[in-house]
Amino acid sequence: MTRTPTRTASRRGAVLAALAALGTGAAGLLGVATAVPAAAHDATTDAYAQVTAAGGADVHVELDLEYDLLMKSAWLTAEAYDARGDDAQDAQLAEHADEVAAYVTERFQVAAGDDLCTPALAGDPTAGDRGGTPYATVALDYACPGGPDTAHTLFSALFPDTESFVHSTETMVTYDLDDEEGSAVLTPADPTVTTGEHRTWHRLGEFFVLGAEHLLLGPDHVLFLLALIVGSRRLRDVVLVATSFTVAHSVTFLLAATGAVSAAGAVVEPVIALSIAAVAAGHLWTARPGAAPVLDVVAEPRRSWYDLSRADVARLAVVFAFGLVHGLGFAGALGLDEPWSWGLLGSLLVFNVGIEVVQLGIIAVVFPLLVLLRRRSPGAARWVTAVVAAGVAAVGLFWFVQRVLGLG
Image 1 (cartoon, rainbow, N blue to C red):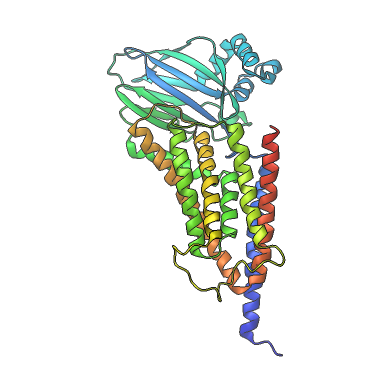
Image 2 (cartoon, rainbow, N blue to C red):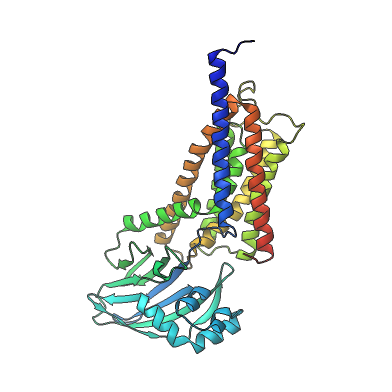
């Protein structure tokens, strides 16, 4: 039989589409593999500052800083850097309190009006924990000129890129100062906030970008979303699972970020890794040899959005349950620890919107390509999605074992 030009072009298009999808999946997995061992988010650090008025123009600051980075940045002894456990780290922090204070006060500054405030340690630094990572709390009192009506400016250059072993450090500031409660994200590009001048829209914009970055730069959540996409048949399916995931992680994110619920990072992170493997393995099971075709986009009759089979309901329930755990992971990454306020709620909601925008963007790019491939060449699509799902499942299992054993 002679092949017609139309049929030849169609086959060529199917092959090119399959190769493009396979290349996209391989590139994504390669990027993840190069990031292993992976935490939930990009390989940098966050610093946390709680700032309160201390009478007159004076200010009290409590900084939470990653212990290992603080020891390394302050160029302390190997014994200080290698200390493990709160008691050993407390002893090292007390012994090296002056060096720690010198490093911190040079990089976190407070000004009253145009004048810098004078910092002093308010007791020895202490060791603690944030999401399974050792942190040090450094309390400082800043003696400031001026009176109670003087506006304050906060500046952070903690763990700068020039130290080479960190990058893009963000300092999460919450303050109750000058009769104003607020929060801000201080970055190398925007390292200051001034009371009375920190516009609401600017602050919300910072949290929107922060939410977008936490999803886009978080291989855990990106791989989970990829596993959901390759296991979805129609637009209806991907919208339903994405909605289930969104509702679930939004609930636990808001509850955990406001302190209503809490969960140890040592539990949350392994379960997140397991959820990635489980969702990807679910698609592999449906795509196994001898199983009914996952999708026939031509022959399968259209179904209403509410016409759910038992398999659909079970999948949505599983995604919802895992979404609850991912929400705890998002909250742990944000790391806010402050009392409830409407300003806090607004920041959290905008952070969550940033997550959703990136999530929808990934779906809008990947899912149409997958549908096109399935229409042009269902066999190639089945093979490509199985390869991607197998890679995602393998990475998820690797992270799960790594986190359970504490090797990350």
